[in-house]
Length: 448
Image (cartoon, rainbow, N blue to C red; front, side, top):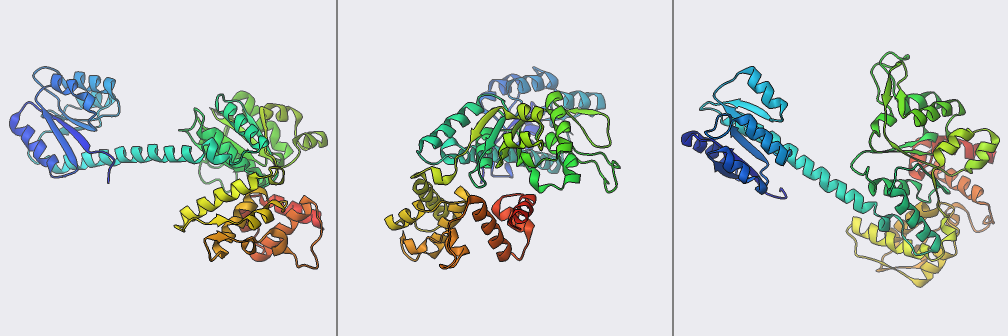
């Protein structure tokens, strides 16, 4: 099904040939066809926004090239198929140069070539419509209201900072504990900015092996090193015109930071194995769950790069500091999960809400979302009861071993539990928890 009829103008002064074209195109009932005998009438009706115009090269009032230029000046999205008795290569090249989609030589058996060409155009038009529709859906998904849920003052402050970030191309640094929604905020900034139609490329710096980071970011030429069997375009080039989100930026190896600084200053990259600079234009948003300034003091992060990246700072508060936002978010996730799974909407009991409010949520919003989805699955009624709320300490510990712990200890326990659940598959656990593999190894090392 298509959103609107596929409209075709047939411009042909030969009455018999015009009927032939109209007849052939009418074989597809989805096509809406209108015919004209001269260029002037065709141009006067461009406000009807045809998708395709089949255009006779020689008309009584205007030449095909002149009409083509006028059509493209009015609406460059209209695709024009020139149809003519002559097949001079110079004429064809000139018409294609000015935007003609195809050039077909007149014949009595034109049908197959014509219908194939129009169908190819139609496929492209509907692909464009689908892309526009998807972009609209993505923008709606990452609207401020859908990204920042809650009415806590700290939450509303984040809302205001995101709005400010969308107005310019200033670099943004997002800080906060794991699970607070740093990538969601980055996407909200991108999809509500002037770069929304261009790519959003996310890179988790902690998940890339040290020896592959430079190639991942800047690309490489074929033969640049052993195993480089083809040219690879790096993330900076992929994000050209859009936004490059560098998550867990504090994990970047110190030896590569100087190269990143140069790229940001010069706005160009050099692929490994090449000496030819390639211009890049992408907005940079970075995120970290570490104390950025401490990393600078320790010497693990360059001070000059820190100042280059810092830009607009957005600090995401942990969920335990957002008060009743926990309940608001819970209801949001209930509605979202029930809708996605075609379930009747469930409510949250007062006792279940109280239990959620009493828990520190070391995994933050990501943990809350998982808790709510599990609660919905466990609930056999229209209301989610307190017995359906299974919190981290209940899953991870027996009653005899529950004790007060730091956030770091909670996080380590969660990682260990996931490793146990998924047979020590660190890549899978990293994906499930949305953290880097290197972060998992670091946490386990800290626990020894």
